[in-house]
Image 1 (cartoon, rainbow, N blue to C red):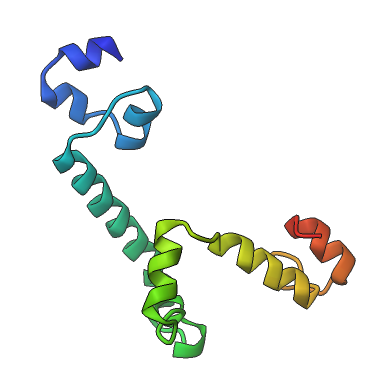
Image 2 (image 1 turned 90 degrees about the vertical axis):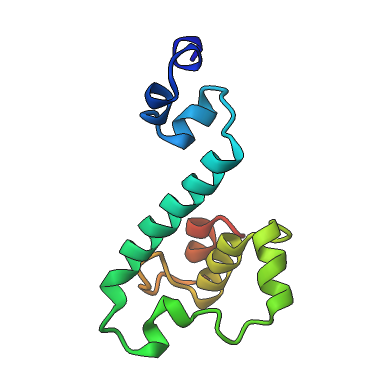
Length: 113
């Protein structure tokens, strides 16, 4: 960490932002913006597999009818979206692949009951 900190920015730039932060480093404002842009690019690449999927199964439209207030609260971390997904799957009695396993087992699988 100290070696990278003492060196030129080019050396530091070779360390991925998440690893740099794990090491105890702090990103500059431009570094934070760059990390967010890289994350957005990765997310967009992952969405490519849904290009030919019907809209009702396309995650791009998952939040299209969700009120802005809820989206902002989720972004701030006011509630855990992944917990809500796990809870819903448990309430449907299915595992992470959508296979019926029963409500009790699904609750245990998803850690909600």
